[in-house]
Image 1 (cartoon, protein in one colour):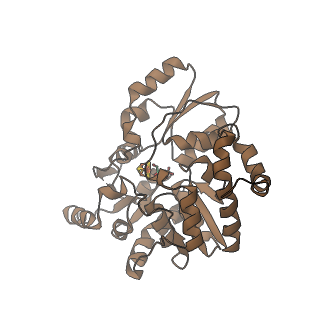
Image 2: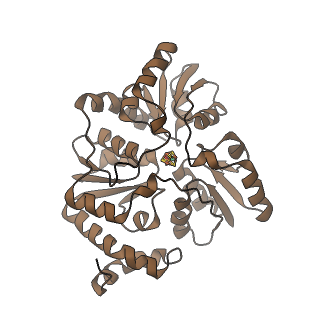
Image 3: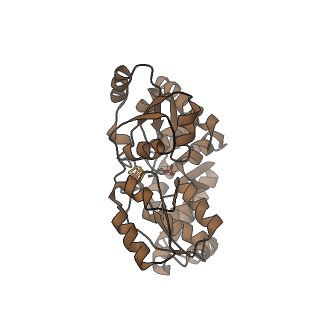
Length: 329
Ligand code: 13P
Ligand code: SF4
């Protein structure tokens, strides 16, 4: 693939937008893929949904819609496209399939997993339900369809507290993220029974690191994802989902900010907030980073890596996601 004058002309407006965060030499390797993918997605009536942790060339270059996991699920249900390419991880592609079972949903790399999702199985949930009979199960959307099939209602980091409170009960099983469960417990009177799952990216942060950054950057705003450990959340100025964090930056325009989350997000958000200085932590999600432009082009061209599930699983698991989207953000 060549970075020729046709590619350069067709992609120039995208490069102008991200040129502050990407050297031209790097752009010249991405642009031919961006050009091909954007052409092909029109020909095939495909939509590209991207999570906020995708790299800037995906987020700004080819995605039709980029967002947090709640908005991606809602968008997947609404789309008129024939094909959905999920630039994110496996549970996000499965959730898109649950919301749009008649669409072809493709994931550019089937190995893009998630440490939270792989921490629990459907059988684990059945055992928990036996242990706590009658207690409703709230599952984070970062779970497999098998777990969702055993779940009363899903949640994301954007609506976990609202979902727990909406059940009007005094106890819930909340899984699999132990840190998110601890955060929710600080925001509600409902008793939370949690699971020992953690996000391998967010669990690496600690409050010493934040205190050090504050010392070296007086006035900085520190905003954290609720998958972080409690000491990190306590040391932060704001806690929210990935889109909640983006909204915070957009509305508050802090002079300096540190987003305590996956590192591509700071690059993506910086593009749309040029006056804000970002102090960038660098914890990469190895699963999100499996998604690359060459893999996206290949899977769209050959329509490979399709998410397939039995009708029974789809029907059982979909209810818990639909219940969540009805309650909303
Ligand atoms: P959001 O729902 O906030 O986008 O988070 C998803 C995720 O995987 C964070 O690690
Ligand atoms: Fe899963 Fe953590 Fe990666 Fe999000 S950042 S996809 S929770 S491993």
